[in-house]
Amino acid sequence: MIVDIHTHTPQFRDKVPEGLRKLNSTWRPDAVRPVNYSWNEYLDSQSIVDKSVVFGIAWEPGERVGSAAGPRDVGDVAEGVNDCTATFVKAYPDQLIGFMSAHPYDIALMDEMERSRVDLGLRGVKLGANYQSFDPLEARALAIYAYAEKHGLPILFHNGTSAVKTAPIAAAHPLIVDEIASRYPDLKIVMAHMGHPWTVDTVVVVRKHANVFTDISGLFYRPFTAYEALIKATEWGVLDKVLFGSDFPIATPAETMAGLRGVNAIVEGTRMPRVPEDKIEDIIHRDSLSLLGLI
Image (cartoon, rainbow, N blue to C red):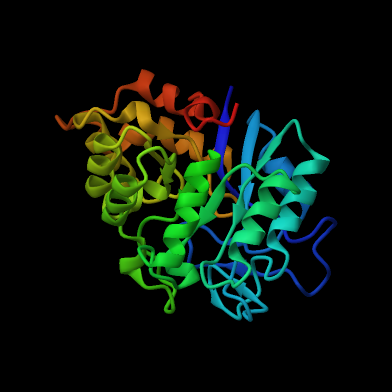
């Protein structure tokens, strides 16, 4: 089975309306990618995987329009994000697993998490403290982790840098997860993007904590970063805790698989170490759902 652990909820059930399509040229150094997209575009991209985890991002209450490109930038669903994810998942229950998102500054935080888990059937949590602009060790954020641990909801954190001017880089540093995992040892955590560019910090946190994993999303299009990250994971013995993820729409599963399989190309003709090819296939076919308690 192939599981894409990292994808974003489509904003439109049907075709993106004329004039509303937006493209982003800053996410990747090698491609321009759509910011908004339809259910069918999403499903077409995911046709080569068996299951996909899908989620949006909950913006601070009062932020009516927001995206990972910055506040007030049209992109991610601004309101009712968990309902949008749940509606999409319920239409394709054999293909999709939905995660909720939450914002610690929402006065209805705990009610929304309970509603998303019980009424909407969402099975994990997506957080990006940098994009959402909150302190990941503040008491209201800790309440999210405690709830997730109690109810067996894995949390996928955005870890790593971002060029978004309003996103504080320190809020997404991988070493913060060391503190969270120490406080909540039974909480399943996925550190996205191998924490780029702090991949060695991510690797040592993953190594330290039994319930902490990382995903490979958003790396292949920076070839040396991807190679270096997987070599570090090899040397520190944590390749078996690296999960497959595409970060759609920023990349597709097909691109990500090709990038993984070509990760050693950058050192061809040198004496530099190689990432074992069988381990690369293990990442692509990893049983992420079992590891995260989702089946």
